[in-house]
Amino acid sequence: MTQQSNNIQQFLIVGGGTAGWLAVATLSNILQNADCQITLVESNDIGTIGVGEATIPPLLDAIRALGIDEADFIRKTQATFKWGIQFRDWLQKGSDYFHPFGALGRRIDGHEFYQVWLKCRAEGDNTPLMAHSVEAELCTQQRFFEPFNAANTPLASAQYALHLDSGLVANYLRDFAIARGVQRIEGTVSQVHQHQNGDIASVSLIDGQQLSAQFFIDCSGFRGLLIEQTLNAGYHDWSAYLPCNRAVTVQSQNVHDALPYTIATARESGWTWQIPLQHRTGNGYVFCDQFCDDQTATDTLLNAVEGEVISTPRIIPFTTGMRKQCWFKNCLALGLAQGFLEPLESTAIHLVSKTLALFVRYFPSLSDNQFLQQEFNRKVELDYLEIRDFLILHYCTTKRSDTAFWQHCANMPIPDSLQYKIELFKQAGNLVHQDEALFQSSSWYAIFTGMQVFPQRYNPTLDALNSQKLQQSLAAGANAIKQAVSKQPAHMEFIRQYCAAP
Ligand code: FAD
Image (cartoon, rainbow, N blue to C red; front, side, top):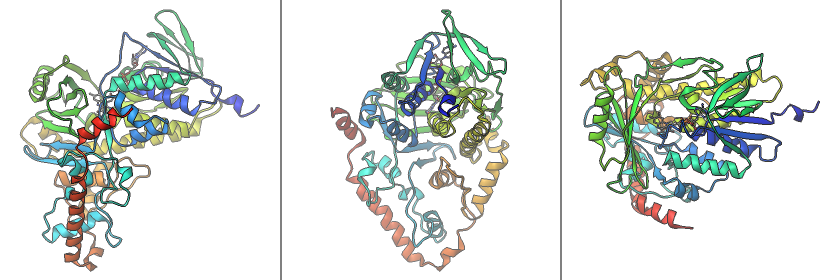
């Protein structure tokens, strides 16, 4: 028997939200010359979740890897650019800080930039850390440029992501996948059939059609039709660490030019988001029902919205956590069927594309997949744990005590893994480095600094350096960023020109 005859030849994807269409786009691209039938079934009656509009930079890498033209994608998804997230009122009411995507400053004489900044700070230099972030300055001045044109300039480290219309993204990926031979079936799955060993054999639709396959990808959303309702893979529930469990969302008209960043404002019992697109703004309030009812949450959101509201408020319940096994038997769970970490750092769609990249790396065959599956599940769990800890950091470091929710956040138990990261950082500014981590050092520094968590001391090897020279070097770096940013086009002006091009 040849190796080829063990290859999977039929995939069935259940669900046509962002996860489903990203899955078929990826599979149809990677398997374009293989003898493999990829079918997606989606239900118009059930529809999609219809939120998920802020992203992080790796999503653009995934889009480019598919060979999609970025300008075309931006035009058709009404996207705007995003340099990071502004957090308002998280530390205390009236405070704000910025989380940029790219690196902060450059190494100086072989020393980490953050350590240099710490030393200068200890010696009285009050320049904020974000004076050394290209993205923070771009947001202050509301500018945009394409970083790949900026090699060897003070702006070279900049990284961007997109705000986009999730419905238009699903349509875009659907057209992409169908053009590559993917079969789309509209219908509602009413029954799932299993082989004797528990593997999934086929699904039946309400209209009586039966669809069989060798491997299934569950993109059915929170319900987890295959992975949970059929295979009972189990769920790690992390609500004790991340208490928010509901969201209310509305769309509104734009009242000013779209900002090149997401705004996340802490509220009485959670936080609201503001995501500017070209044609409208997405708004939502993520809250905890232990402290706030749906009506109060809706009123809070509607009071916070700037422009005229153009959709009916929608309540979305969720449970923070993830499937105990994301690849279980002959089924991969993806998107909301796989797990959910609240959208504070816009990581959900990224987790879909990261999971798909791992799935391609540990691709199954019809023979024994035990170790591939084990390693794949371990890696996906590591990704979730990393993001989970990072999200908790935003809450547990608050100094707010004005509402029961914030008192709870300031005193709730945190995982040992995060406790360790915080204690390590507090000693001398060190971080735990994880292979293939999503959040690099600058992200952790941004949140720690924004929440006023500072190390007791800097690395003593810096004492050999001349303080005055260091301070001059930092000031020159910050000034160079400011000057270079001021020469870039306004964000919306850039988009208008970019999208006007054929
Ligand atoms: P869905 O969009 O729910 O799609 C499920 C699909 O399964 C649909 O096509 C449905 O018709 C189909 N289906 C279900 N049952 C059946 C059945 N029986 N038969 C046939 N088909 C069926 N992500 C980000 O990256 N950034 C964000 O800013 C962000 N914000 C979010 C805010 C909130 C409040 C929530 C809840 C999520 C947010 N997300 C965000 C996550 C993002 O929305 C999802 O990860 C993304 O949309 C993928 O969803 P999905 O495709 O898994 O599920």
